[in-house]
Image (cartoon, rainbow, N blue to C red):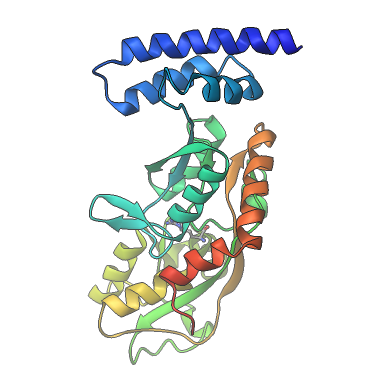
Length: 281
Ligand code: ARG
């Protein structure tokens, strides 16, 4: 076994060298991709050793951790200039760092995230995503890292004051979110207008196309702050848990993510990240 490991190390070191030569003049990203491909064949243990031994000859190689998200959901994920920032982006980066991996974020429509996790196009889905029984049929979820509340945004002075008042009204939601799923069930598919972005649902509310928007409380607060004449109803529509979605076959990654996430929760890193984006009430 020891010899086998040595052999793998040598083989890998040779491969890394080759990558190094081929890589001259390439961008760092290219080298990382190439090196990752080469290392997939070796065991993780061997990879770690080989990487350490080879540091003088080759740049450090990191396996990538690809995360699917929908960066339309402040303060969890949104664009700041060209960069995706937010609570999820930072927690994911901390997880990747703990696992010695390089985080790559892929922005997509919210309803494509689970599909991408299932197809293996990405390693994980992290998007302020609620754990639901239906989603658990297609993916596994990590331990929860946050609580979400579905809340109702209306125009100030609206005659919608309670959840009951929503009956027969037009409700705007982000497509395929729990807000969409619950509202469609409770108030009827015909009364629920689905938008690709939560912000578009809010614009529809401002424009008078819908009477209310059902969306998670933190983005709701951001949208209400950014636009005049809106308010959030005092009643909570649903309370939920956010977690990271992982392919059902990939229990090894799920365990790694859980280990890292639990440590980051225990040592206060998650709280620190949350506090950076959400001021305590
Ligand atoms: N928590 C809700 C859900 O899982 C909404 C999440 C929307 N997230 C986003 N990044 N757009 O359905």
